Length: 98
Image (cartoon, rainbow, N blue to C red; front, side, top):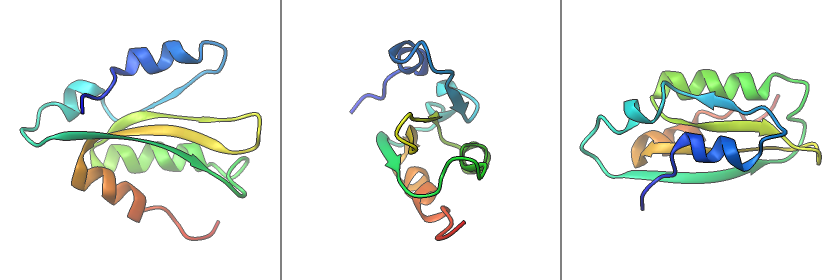
């Protein structure tokens, strides 16, 4: 599976500013491991609690790229791209409760 360039993701929603994660696609592609891309949507109390900033910080620490944004439904949606083990560690680093 070939991940979409981040520029394509930003074009998909021009009216909503996207928060880009990580250092860019080039950083993720500097590895010889296969890359994966995961789309996600988070439900519950995720707006007004700095969830997007937390996600961005974790992505930088782990070394994955992608985007994250609030939706009009009160959820947070995004995409994470990188080596499979690092993308999986993004999921395990999410807090259980806020």
